[in-house]
Length: 436
Image (tube, rainbow, N blue to C red):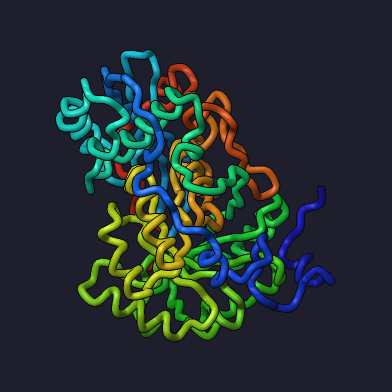
C-alpha cells in the first residue's frame, strides 16, 4: 500500500472543507444522552446474587520496558524513555484468579508496599462480592485490586463483567479513538503531527486526539503560532473525522480564550484538560471558558480518584465529559462516576493511556453505561497493551470488540515478569533537546 503523506493528501481531491464534527452515530453530541433511560440500579452489583468465595492471596507484579530511541515520546518539557506496568492478581479458595492494573504513574514501589502492608492483610479472608465495601479509597493502589475482584465476580457468575454492570442496553462493539500527538516537536518538524493523524485514519480510526507538542516557552510558541498547525491538521484529515485537542493543563485561561475561536472554526469535538484542576478557582475558570465555546465540549478529570472530585464540575456544568480512569478510581467508583454524569446529561469517555489491563476494564465500563461515546487508546508503543496476554484485545477498523467470555475474558502469558523485568527509575526525564 502506498503511504499517504500530508503533502500528497493536501494536494488531492480528498482534502475536504471543514464541516460539522463527525460522530459515527450521526447524532449531535449534545443531544444524545437525555434520550437514554436513567439507570434503575442503585449500585453496580444490584441484582447480582452473592456467591460463597474467599480471597486467599494478593500478588503484585511490576514490569518495565526500555523504549527504543525511535519509540520514545515527548510532551511539554519531558521525554519518556521507558514504560511500566503495575499488575495485580487476586487469588481465591475456588481457584479463580482475578487480574487488574493500577496506574504506573503513582509510584510503583510505594504502591506495591501499600498493597502488601495495607491492602492484602485487610482483604484476605473476605468475599470478593463485597468489592464496594473493600475498595472504596482515594489510594490508586486499590484500583487494580478493585478491577481484579470484578474479574473474579464475572468468572464466578460465568458472565462478562460489562453484563453484570449494566442496567440497560449494552454495546460490546466500542468505537475507539487514536490518542497521540506526542511524537512531534516544535524544535524539529511540528507538521509530523499531520502525518500521524493520516496514519491513524488509514488504519480505520475515525477520531484522533493530539496534544500541544513540546514546551512552548523553549521554542517561542504562542497560540498564534499553534493555530496554523491546527488549521493544516483539519484540512489534512477532512471533515469526516473527529479531532480532539488536549492541553494537559498547560495554558492559562487567557490563552485558552485566545484559542477558542480556532477550535470553533476547525470543529474540534472536545477540548481536554484546558486548565489546571487543582486551583481554588478551577471550576469557575472552566465555567468562564465554556461560555466562550458554542460547539466544543470540555472534558477532564482523568486523575480524579472519586465521584466527589467530579461533583463540582458536573454541578456547575464545567465539564461536558467526565474522563475517569479505572486504574485511578477502580471499576466500582468508575461506575458511580459515569452514572452521576449521566444524570446531568454528561458523557463518560474514560481516560485510557496505560496498559492492556486498563483498556480491558475501561472497555467493560464503556460497554455497560448508557452515556458512552467512545474510548481512548494510547498510540505510543507499549508492549503491555497486547504482548502480555494470551489473547489480547485488538482494535480493527477503529473498533474494539469485547470477547463473550466470563470476567474480563483475558489471561496473562506465563512468566510475564521474566520477559519484562522491572527496573527502577522514573517513567519520564527532562527532554535534553529543549533549547532552554
